[in-house]
Image 1 (tube, rainbow, N blue to C red):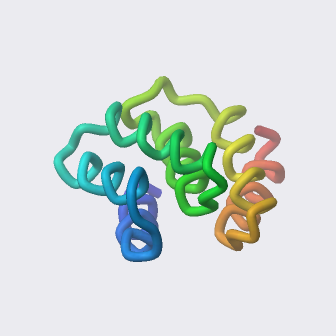
Image 2: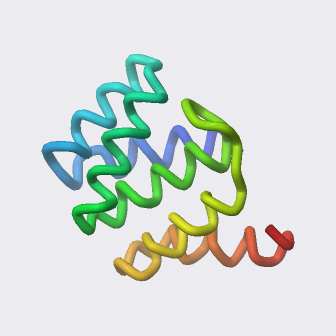
Length: 98
């Protein structure tokens, strides 16, 4: 799952700017806590990829305490923002009972 998470983050890294770009830089530098802060800002600004990547951090416990409830919440928000991978991961967590 972690390989998929990293791949997902890298695939969407070229889609948005500002907080999202700063988050991707922090992630690539291994500063997952800082990446989470920037992904949170991007998500709050309506960036579906930012919400998705924040969910990945919660899902994997990178830079934040692992929390499937929060992961599902942010996957759902990504889905609401028409980010399809958010919908897919939300459904997967739902099936797992998270």
